[in-house]
Amino acid sequence: MLIPTHPDSTTVLDVEVTGTGEPLLLIAGMSAHREMWTAELLDRLTPHFQVAVYDHRGIGGSSRAEGSFTIADLADDARGVLDGLGWDTAHVLGTSMGGMIAQELTLGHADRARSLVLGCTTAGGPGAIGTSGALRLVEAIASRDAARVARTAFEVNLSPEFCSEEGAFEKFTKFSTLRKVPSAVVAAQAAACAGHDTRDRLAAIDVPTTVIHGDVDDVIDVAEGERLAAAIPDASLERWAGVGHMFWWERPEQTAEVAIRTAKAAG
Picture 1 (cartoon, rainbow, N blue to C red):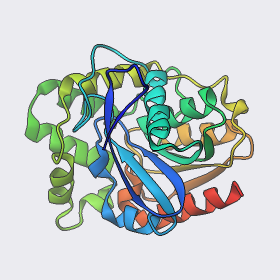
Picture 2: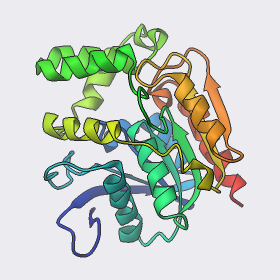
Picture 3: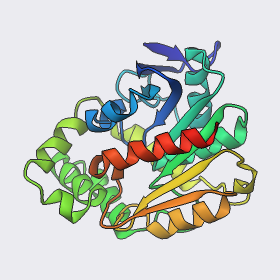
Picture 4: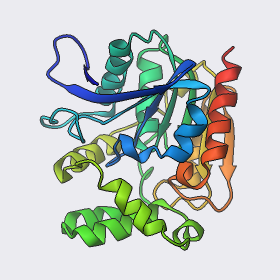
């Protein structure tokens, strides 16, 4: 379904809802689209939640992104999804850039998030996304070589162990190309991520929160997840050994278990 981000907005987002139970909003990361939430994860979530996934502005079936935008703008988009679905509140799970959006959504609209799962993400600030993997990915995207981008994205987003599995690269490329992701939108998303900084405001988050981070994440270092969890009152940290940036691909069952447990803590 197509949902305007607010009544007077020209931004319309492509949203899909499945499952039964309390509302759960999944917020994807940079260059990702709603198909990147795989069946291995969704099949474990939908018996417990009514799950909404959506394409960010400029991605897939959503309307074009006009000019630059901030993480706060994307958080307003997420709020618009909640409004369009008639969800006064929802549990929220955001990964990477989606985790940044989830932070801003909760801080800017404190009455909308019932619980938070923040995965492979950061509170921002200087050097927060300065890993060698992130730089490799930026260089690959700048090259406009589609084969190089696909291979680099695969290698930096997933752990060496997962990458070595038979058929893993083919699965990644199949899912990543299911919906249109314009390079100009990815560049705008990267600029938005570079400007993200919630470090001085995180103490205001007062919903049950779990931070997940793989300890071989080559996009956002695990230390960022540790700092994020330490800054949010009573947040729990799940540090997963041998897991890369796209942890929900590598550990879908554990990811669902964390979402269910965190939601239950909200009562």
